[in-house]
Image (cartoon, rainbow, N blue to C red; front, side, top):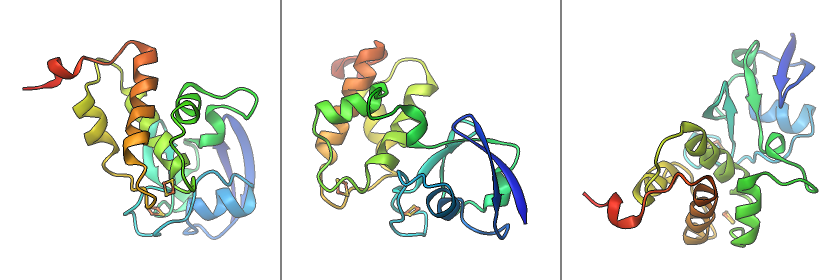
Length: 163
Ligand code: FES
Ligand code: FES
C-alpha cells in the first residue's frame, strides 16, 4: 500500500503493509535512524517519536495510523551543525554512554518542554520514567533535561517542588 507521510515537515511517499511498525518505516525506508528498536513491546522508549506533538512508541504504531498526521523524530529537532536545545543539553551533560536510548529520551523530554508551564524536578523524574537506559546514565539524563528546562526558565526550584 502506498502512503504519504509527513515527517519533520516533509512529505514522503512510502510503500509498506499498513500494519508495519512506524519505526521500521522510519529506519528502513527513510533512513531516519535516530529512533531505535529496543524491546518492540512498548516497554523501553528507545523508539519514541512524536505524532501530532505527543510522544508515542513507534515500535507499536502501525504506519497507516500516522497518515495525515505530523510525525517528528529526533532528526527534526536539530542537525549536527545546529543542535536543538535538548540535543545541546544532552551533549553538554555527556548524558550518553552507548547512546542507544538517547533519541527516545530526547523526544520524551521534548514533550515535557512542549507542555508549557512550570516544571519541577519531580515533574522531570515522573515524566522520564517511561524511558529506560540500560547503561544506567539516568542521573546524567535527568541533569540534561533539567539544563534544557532551566534554559527555558520554566523550572521551579527543588524546594518549591516539595509538597
Ligand atoms: S522499542 Fe519501542 S518501547 Fe521499546
Ligand atoms: S546510554 Fe546506553 S542505553 Fe542509555
